Image 1 (spheres, helix red, strand yellow):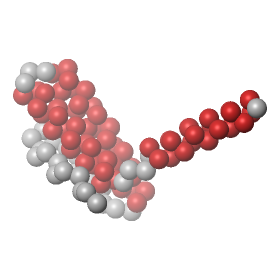
Image 2: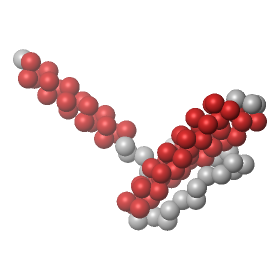
Image 3: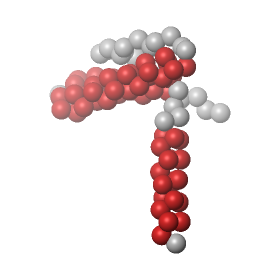
Length: 93
């Protein structure tokens, strides 16, 4: 019984991690632009700690977007910069 529960938990963790990594390079780049926009807004309001956190998140998301773009054989997306316009809303299907 314990081995069944263990195998079920392990399988659940593996499935969840695989689904969590299913984003495309475009989705990761959109996240990077969103975090950059959040950093810009926080800095504009004087919340520099939050701005720094969001800037790091933008850099991390961009790094994931670059890796995924290379894996997908697509062009490498441009690094986000302060002042970039906010991303368009996500597509609805």
